[in-house]
Length: 164
Image (cartoon, rainbow, N blue to C red; front, side, top):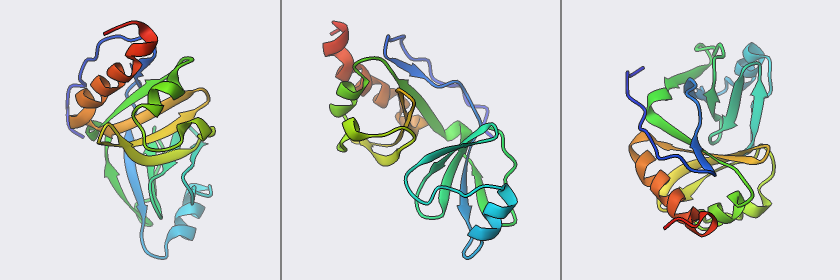
């Protein structure tokens, strides 16, 4: 894991960063999904969903691929595991205008997005993963795009905060 410094972002009533957690990608080797799930003791999401297992969030990240947020033992015998902690920047969008703000940035129907749904899409031409945790939306992008995504979120929220 790199010893990267997390960028600082201006405070905002609806937009914040997610506290640092370990993030790893998990990709099942060919024909090892049943053994991977048995070793982990869970059925991994096969569709764009988020599940909570022990102290970790597991997000669908494509066919036989997941992001694991948090500390969880991962069986390397059944999957490729890649550290992503220093490579991703996570933002939390909350409040009464979260859906309206995201409608300005995302090319998906975010208003119909249910709890624990996951999408791999773009926000202001930046590749993101977005998911819903209760009433909050979490957006993850590569850390090098964190400043640009934060700026886009700030601009999209101006109509609801009186800023700008």
